[in-house]
Length: 64
Image (cartoon, rainbow, N blue to C red; front, top):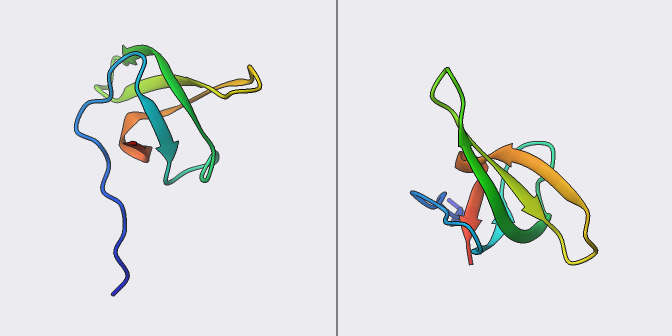
């Protein structure tokens, strides 16, 4: 069984992170704008070095 990175319990604004699941898997950047939706899912905006932003679920990222 391969060692799979486990999601960080709570990424904080400014943390460096890498996406380990979902549409943006393999991308990395800085955590910005943390929100909790009505359904209770935590979403974050990740800003890459190039300035490109994308939103993903917090459960899909691991803090470096």
